[in-house]
Image (cartoon, rainbow over all chains, first blue to last red; front, side, top):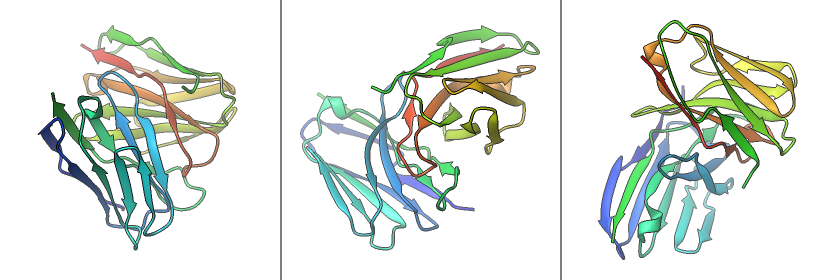
Length: 112
Length: 113
């Protein structure tokens, strides 16, 4: 059984600060996605990473996939109140499988 | 935004009553999913569909059934609602198995009294 952990569980910061959240698995990810979910809405995809060591940037967000494909990080530079939300990193086990596992996520609150 | 709607958006019902939630998509995606989201548990897969009339169980399927009679609609039924099924329910769609992007609907907040 794959264990998926996200840390920290909750983060409250001031606007302009930098932050990093983490996603760790006990097994190798076949692929890893980061989603952001705002209150009262469904999750929205931010990025998908597939290759170990891969780094993707989306404006102020930098996503890194671990070399061993068992962990990932999301770094936000100069956080803004609009970054507030629940950050999720589901993973899908095995090719052709439907077993997408979601962790409890990291809840980020950016204060103006 | 992917064309996914869920109905109703909010529902309050009583224990023991049947409840049906509807997910409708306009993207013609093959795969559809039902999740529930509860504090501390993240999103958990209830059932999924890989084609019309093709469905299978997820990790928390007890007490739920699904049906998919056409590509665009995926129904989730609680045959006899219980208080433990109070949750927010999300439908998702994708056009590839598992590893590809899942697009989520806006959710249905269900309260079972």
